[in-house]
Length: 262
Length: 284
Image 1 (cartoon, rainbow over the protein chains, first blue to last red):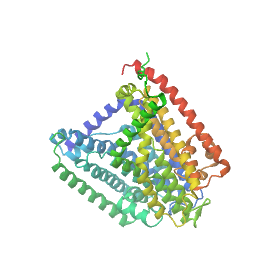
Image 2 (image 1 turned 60 degrees about the vertical axis):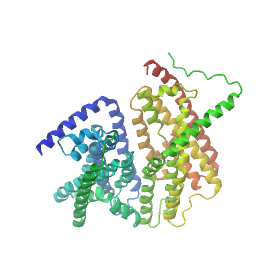
Image 3 (image 1 turned 90 degrees about the horizontal axis):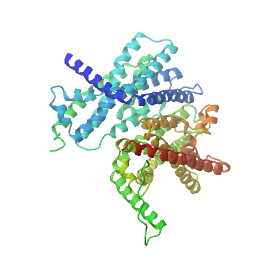
């Protein structure tokens, strides 16, 4: 464990110093993040303009949810995305060999090699909105906050596993970098509570097939104290199953890896 | 020092115009073959642009919860609007800024400059041919969306409106293409050109009418966007498609679309002219 923490520190350090080469981009990206943030708030005000709420969520509750969405989107951009994107490239060019030769777990190594520090402001904006809306809501319970931590971790695990499983197909199909974009496409649905969608197809899709409901709706429900025991268990269950699946799939894929030149 | 494209040999038998015609024909044939080879990837990219369909779900849900309609739109109106928005977004996808950023930074633009045709036409050909490869799956998916949409959804009232939409969306594509070329030419000076295009995208989700029909935004936002290109890229073409734009405003909208194309085109050409000098100067 200690070894892994040390490695994490080295990985983070080297990837941060590499990105500092491109400082100018940071400013434009910051403006982009701020605009997206203002846009999200404007969007909420449009949807809630009539005070009728959305799928049983009040404006402030929906702001908590959008906060959760931005927080997780930011964390994905910082921690998950820069790594999974590289995996397909490593398989295609054969540099995966170097990773496999190293005496650390290969899934750990490919999943933690890079950090995108430039996306960190998104994490702060999301967290800020979440806390602000919670304070304005008032009646926040400690149970809710304590419960939200495992729910957020489980949401992040679900995101990581889906992306990781998708990109692992790179061992068989050559060009799959863009397959991750598909997940992003669906992920956008997470800025709305699952009950905002009309009953039927869309809700089933976002609960069972692409489990967006467990990524944002459930952690937000925990924070505002409207979560059911079934949701907690289902969230932890889905995250565990996906994690085991991602691990088994990775091991299976490695067996069919023959490097780029052979 | 300027980097000049070498002059083409004087055509002996062929007239100048037929030579140009032949160049473009070859260019488009090559790019069509290229894009057809990448059809799998094009379908993935097509599915990535889910935002209008997600918004369709949310607004229909909102209308249903509100007793059938919301701000003058019932479920069928929302369905028609957002299916149209999806189509408009698909038809105006542009990636020229990534292409230019890459080619200028890596220097691969140099070999393009040696060809007897301006590089911008090659970018243009790749976008236009891609659109033709994209058409069949886009219309298949629209069929599915229409089948799933609430009963009584009228995507377009008649053929005339659909044809006018095709004209308007072509102009919308040209606005987006010339605007993105402006960002692309900035790659001669900065590494942030792609970030600028992403900033455009974030703004466009709201201001072009992808998130909600513009009528739902505060009055001041509605007034201000009229002076920006955003509604001319998605909102107006979709209003023409669904027949919501009054006929009296049709010429005005199409005219303003032409003006935006012209303004951005001239600016992009000028930036290219001074940028390419700098590109030659760094010796790439």
